[in-house]
Image 1 (cartoon, helix red, strand yellow):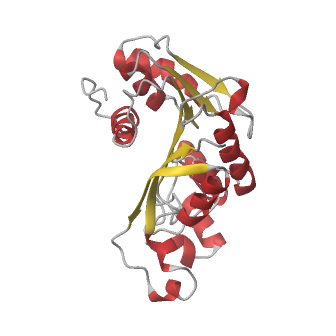
Image 2 (cartoon, one colour):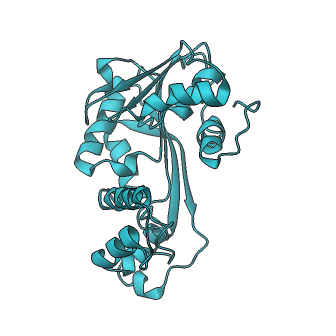
Length: 262
């Protein structure tokens, strides 16, 4: 979307270039019916910034339950040499707060967000997305890795074994993640490791089929539904316990449309 900006930092490049570019493959931002966009679970707000800069005629609102999006202003200044554009705003929301409180979007997108929301709340949120969208509005959803996939724990940096989180017990995972293998850890690394483990314990373990049902039950149709599988073959021991598709589904990309009668 913003090919003139090149970053040596992989995180910045991923957030500002690769993720927005991937969304553009499935959503036509030139569609005149799309004029208000919500980045749901915007994090640092870098994806929202990229999309706002590429679409100056559209309003982009980044929402999150934290104020991590404050980093967007610093990123825009230090990395791009600009101020935040006037068509971009951010809002801190309460978990489960209705999007209708502040916008009537034509497009809602999320990138690796929905797997972090408790299932009972997630179901309500997807219903609220439907009710908040304008007629024929769209929801774009990406999740990777899915929980039951080889590295679905989001702990690949520490748990190297594919499906290790399904074959190791809770205490072993906690020990390896938080303490390593007897390594001497800096305080910042200790804090990061603890945050990563806490994040792992809160994953909702949603599957592609479950999420499909959530969207259908909320009154959405499907304009696109892509499931990308891992090339790694799961061990036979896990196939006795888990569904093979759950173990091999690594990424989902959904494009859902609000049906006319909802």
